[in-house]
Length: 206
Length: 403
Image (tube, chains in turn purple, orange):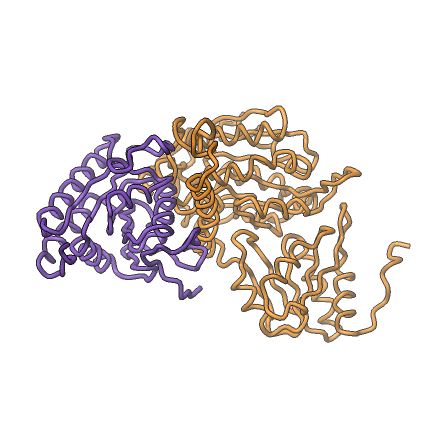
């Protein structure tokens, strides 16, 4: 099925359709997607780095699959994510950009008790985006179902650019997705951020 | 997949080798065997590395539940028990799947309807349970004969729904079904349906995969939702604002959750096409007249097509294998040359004809029928007569058949 639907920053509308229902298909191994179009994994990683470098508030949302050291791989990934965060922080212009790392430790519905500025929840992720004025974010280590809920709600109600670094098959509800994520792949993304430092126009200063 | 791959080549306690599923299903030598449909279910489950089967084996529609009990006694199923009712069975299946087990069950007719509340719950909770549905009548007066009306209800639950024509389909699709439904981007329950009695109680030649090969075990760590997390939805369903509040956030989350379930049905398309060699099979689709059918209506249609061919009337055939995902694009393409589309069904409602009508342009081409129900057979002659009537060819009335 070919589709003209593109997964773009919103706000799309009250209840945007799932990208899958609009004919957007997930990448195969070795591929990623940008706005629903299949690209090579390397191209997706490069574009993800560009998005981080051009955003005012580039943010990583690590989920429970990497926040809890339930196996060696998770611990290794968590270190790689920390490395990516530090790299972004180093490479952006601190006068107009602020990198953030906001955890999604679990999926318990916490509205209205949650403080959305310091914690993101898959059932109302738009609150975290709005409160922190986040304009580019990456989900990593979030269970696929909860990630898709969040990504779609963000697309519906915010203009944030969403990236999904998925350990499984990827996410068509993100604007950009890489699949089969490993610690090495996250480090490769950090390498792209370093490589592109200075070549991407930062956001306008206020 | 890495965890599953690590099992390949190892043996289970019955000395079966965990085998690469693609090799097992597509390359390994097959042994022709003469079995009833119910026995075929047993043979597929023997090779499926099921952790748990829960059964309510009162149904006369299939002996599968009892036969799988024998498999448990032989050591091929991890655990097996009987529920108090069909509703209890399906709830217990959910509990087992929440806990990370590969689950199998069977049901039919009124049992399916009694348990219906569970099926959207299974789908919403992303539980890849496999349920065999050996369809039978559901309305009063009670019938134990085949009738596919229950499928129309299952099609709205968010489950994958496949409709097998033959015992061979049944055998292959049980095993392939786990491969599709356990993909992390799918991870949905599968209702694998057949027309009861016609498939379950008749014997047929079925090519079986080697008995010493079995599927690798289910890997719950690939689940798209946390496994058995009592603090979070989907396991935790009450006491939280998510469920109990009436506000924009609750509505948006619920709506997005449902959309995600149906998105997963869409994602199953890619995997299903790979494993099943397409969502439909076609024959002679350049013909002016096409039959679109699923289940044993396909077999009867083939016979009708052969009858008409002898009379010089060329008719093509579309066999619909999966109802969810619905092969809309495939049906539009296959029917684009046809002026008449006949949809014979074993139910009074004509749900397949409605689906086809909603799919194709110029749907006045669709002729819903013939319909039989309540256990009636569908002789090929009545399909042939329907086609002749549509074409304006004089056909003898079959109202008095058997008289």
